[in-house]
Image 1 (cartoon, rainbow, N blue to C red):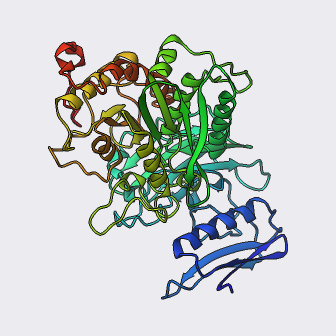
Image 2: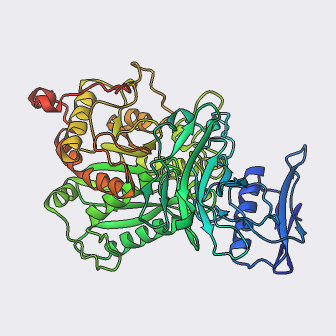
Length: 532
């Protein structure tokens, strides 16, 4: 009854997988990659065996075969979840490159040692799956580990230069100038920026150099932005579940539904107020700063500890207590966990850009359970609760600022929403100077806003203040810090500060009068621009 078979050679054993004919090609590939990763994560490789994987697509979509071919070589590199092929070679590498961890993304191409003892390592960013609506494969986010082992037979590199040779093909290649790569010897923290990061627009190569002599016998991680791992996500959810058992906190953790890979879409509901606030994060999985933002917000709302060893007693500050009385918050920390685990920039497991899946367009149905269940389940829950204010948290590759993008192009835009947005942004900037009011995307012209985009759809659907909050991949020009730049810690602090503007605008959210006439000049709407 099964038409698909796949073989693995692991620990001198053959593992067979069978796939029912009812699986679509996308779901088949997802199942294949997930299971293949699990097989290698839980099994030790047999010494002196090289595993070379490849895939062949038949003319008919009803046939697909994935197979392994063992060869007598030395193992070097394990599989990456978003890779369709990989191999191991006998090359003796001075530096071992790996992306075989949660959120990793890089492909090793080759290396060369110059006469002066400097080592050059060529790499490529792996693309996301093909996006049907946009007709492209996104790429930009990368994260990998470099191990420089102690060796008596291999020369120690004096300097190591990493070159990402397909950076010019990135979705936002114009954003590379001014970008600096993060590095740390611990994936969970201690990230700093490499100031010698450079992008050559003529060759399309992004490169940076480190002192090889200081890395001998150790490992370093490199990333476009610090990873927010799925393990950390689950730990955050566990903290929220613990807070739900605290009688002093009104909190509930539930699943809105499941992703294509079967991960839960967790939503944390907090507070008892009449105003309904929905705050979602990380629709684009490579924008990891969005989930750090979520962690900072939840830490303040629930009185969580920044130190996991301390008990969380639910103690909150006065403004947070006021916010919990004003609002019922529905917070989704990670809208795209599948893409996050796979190291994608903008898409889920099957290649859907979730921030373009909030409404159907000509010839394209969205959201659907088959392609974008993350949006489908979230929008269904929002329809049930209603929405009075909405924030969609992202990261932007090009603009070196934190900023708010509004719904100026929507048909319901008028003096009411303009005044609410002006007061929200101004209050946010007063609460945390890492937010500013003047720089943002160029607003859409009247009635030109795309309703397939999340914040626009929510604005029209619920006639509410609905914004997209963007954080920079680069340093933040509002408060520059070259060594750390905009980083994971500052994203958490900005998340905690979100409560200030929400409390400030709450009395006006559903006010049908001309409330803007009594507002102060400092709250006036400023039409933003990308020019700075």
